[in-house]
Image 1 (cartoon, rainbow, N blue to C red):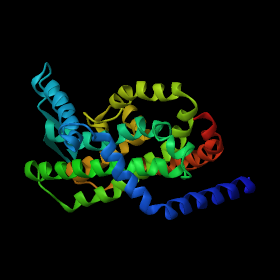
Image 2 (image 1 turned 180 degrees about the vertical axis):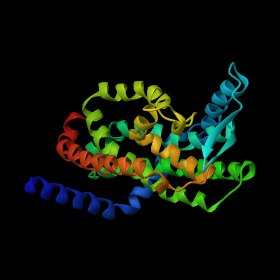
Image 3 (image 1 turned 120 degrees about the vertical axis):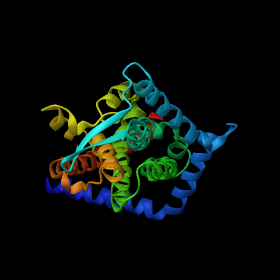
Image 4 (image 1 turned 90 degrees about the horizontal axis):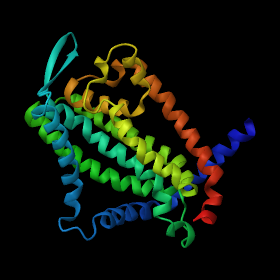
Length: 282
């Protein structure tokens, strides 16, 4: 047990050293990743805004103009019921979801998509998941700024908004750690990659992106606390709509913290177990 713990510490130190030594290259590659993603498109990086905007519009139209005509969302907060415009409610939920869904699906195939760094260039594999995640974070920052402007205009601002600087780095790290497990395994198996893509629509409906998970009947509201994606969606809404701090939900935060630590060690274990075999399968 002590030997395994020592190995994890040594391996973690190697990852930190790799990121420190290739720090400048990581940010340059993140920029190149963005350029590569939107290369050849007539409107270029604007697709980073157009695609999420269209998705949000479709869901808003379905719920507001469609059959059910659900124009508002009522949420019980601090002893009173507040009514939120459904567009605003969904906007704040979708912004973290766009980053999360891409981090899960694209993060799982980053090693395969960037195989040249593994087979042709002497480049630390662990940094592949980092620079691609940073590229997605750039897009997320732009979308978050647009969200903030809309929320400020339609709802107002408060110091609670600053909590995004707590939730956003946590979200970034959480899904980088997840990719430490999924990317090496997907390099070995396309079936896992296809399975991840297939279950994403189900994960969407099991996460409170378009509804308030706190208002679900028992025991569903408790079960939802174990969904780490839900932690971030609720976190953004707590920051921009509900005006509530993360420590008002101690149980949810403790559960997430346990999952965060467990995912970190699982990612370290899986990456360390598979990294030397990756060049052979690519």
